[in-house]
Image (cartoon, rainbow, N blue to C red; front, side, top):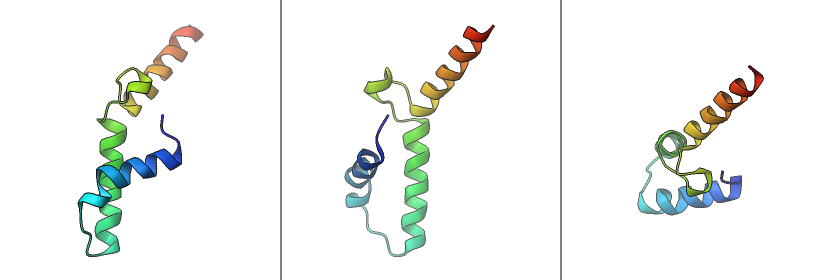
Length: 68
């Protein structure tokens, strides 16, 4: 999982520097869209090539299995 500083750096290098935003609203929409992509679809090698959402779901399932 990325630390907040790494997350901001990743966003800037993958998206912000490659686009021009005319308004703050456009920038905020781009951030929302990128965060949705990052958390739901982008695979991360540090968590077994899963998306952050899939990794979190796997922890929840594992925790449920251990309690049973």
